[in-house]
Length: 185
Image 1 (cartoon, rainbow, N blue to C red):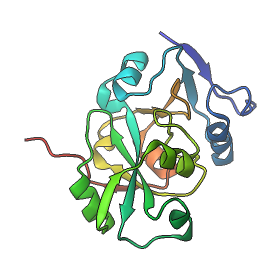
Image 2 (cartoon, rainbow, N blue to C red):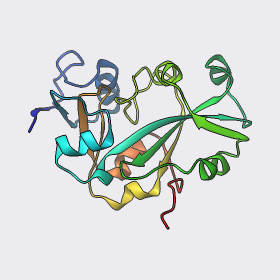
Image 3 (cartoon, helix red, strand yellow):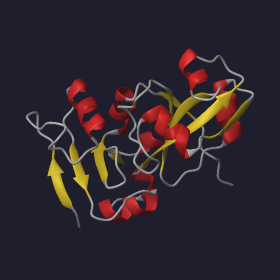
């Protein structure tokens, strides 16, 4: 199924299968997690769920949106005028942009392009972890993540993931629990 690797306190950023910046973030937080590396990319939630062998809803999608018309920090102006916002949502859900806009109090909200994602987080789309980013962004976590005992999130590359209980993941990401997933009919 995978070449599985466990993080240990002695493991350094250079020996971990996680992206070095993410491995450093784990060390700074004092967090030890099992980082799994897969030979095939796990860029999409479906690919990650198949590789891990879990339900699609146990995969955490780390999505960067840009909000305009809400208070902007100096750093967000440098990144193109909008405020980058990280939204954590389960792999089976879609973000309701109108609900997200209302939650942020923003005039406009849109998905960030690949360039902004990399500038704000330091990671490429498909490998963005829930924390350990280049810049501090506001983090919103959809309540649906809390329905699971364990969720799996990217460890900074399109080939690596790690498990964690959702409440801890949200806490380490310094996220706020909200309801931003699309409602099903």
